[in-house]
Length: 289
Image 1: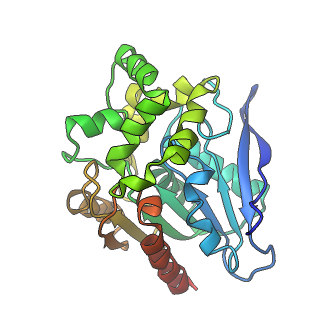
Image 2: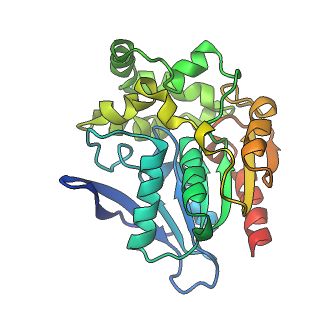
């Protein structure tokens, strides 16, 4: 069995007097000739949500993954969480590891953050692989889905929802609608998503989408400056962000983007249907080579 990559940390100074300890991992050979890959998790996620994906590629590529500020085991300060903040974290990480170019593989909110980064620094992105990205919703989301994705605006209601959500039962009930294969929503996954909710400051990051939903939208970057390779990989059974409604919106933002719909997969496509997702990602990476 392959020895898991150890946790690494760096201190990110966001501004004068404000800093956060960020967790990341790195995989694969440092001297590979191929463009490195950076995996960016979605809302509520963490590095471990890529555990069924990264091992399939680390023999060939230098790979990085990190916990976004406010999530996973990264620190959770009381700052203004937004897609631009996560894009700034990607920029800081690129500087830390002295990376000139990278392939970004992002899921949901992490995919939206990757788009913002590519918009701001298009010359440093070799390719965008966007797994069920958030940020463009239109009229596609029903009331239950909006609650899950943090679009309930009242702080009081948000705090009540957080209190109800921040335990294994609440996490299980929230994860279940994002999976087609319910066997994947096991105790290990539930515990992974439950632990960060107990951290000091978790309420700030987890409630940010409900308190400032506009900070998690992509409407203000049309047209997008990034013109390079981009691919949308979507779970056919994503009821919150149905592909037939959302993919056209993203192809307005990224007209060059190819789109692939994977059957029998929900919103967490990379984990829900990891073998099919990995096969599609391998094809995309070969195309980029």
